[in-house]
Length: 242
Image (cartoon, rainbow, N blue to C red; front, side, top):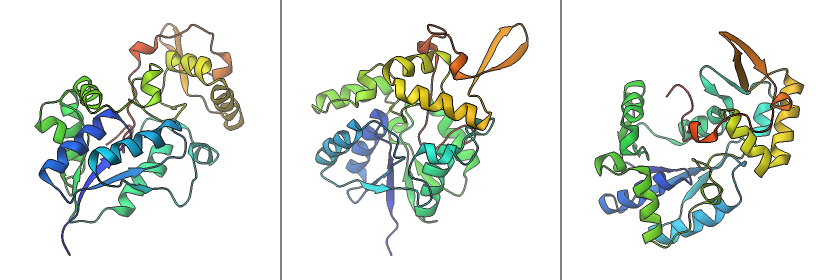
């Protein structure tokens, strides 16, 4: 059996360009996408556009246990020091179930994320891995330029001003992010606020009382609080500890 070469496609600009680059080196590359069931519907369009660009179908994988992030949250956990359970269940475990020991795996870390790539290698020494964007010294902004040159419209979440094409309503987001979600996707904001109360768990921390860290529920978050441009959320196949 020939060793597989897998590019983990996340519907983000970086992973799309990393996959395109990788096809030049590995014509038999297999692009694979872990569908969380909670991302913007425009991602389906983006996948089709990228498949035409790659001239190759993207294999879509899904968790056999959970349909979307809300089912994961119902199990009683939102986010903690080691990351978000939604990423573990809907991406990490799906990847682990699919991968083989002799796979060569490619990830879309850009040149500015070299530290994350190195941390991944250190934490996963058993994985044979390459990082096409780092090898080509490409930034995330250059990936957007690649998509523009290819006449591929960027995913809708980018157009709406989000830094990453994550699930709608990421539990790793801060106050500014969630106030933006409240404006753009009020139904998602309300659903997450109710989930917090149901579980007795909060996403945000109110640090306004000196050194005291007070838990703050979303339904207590004041409009206008937080600056989303200061919030950086990353959710590829990793979240928290990678």
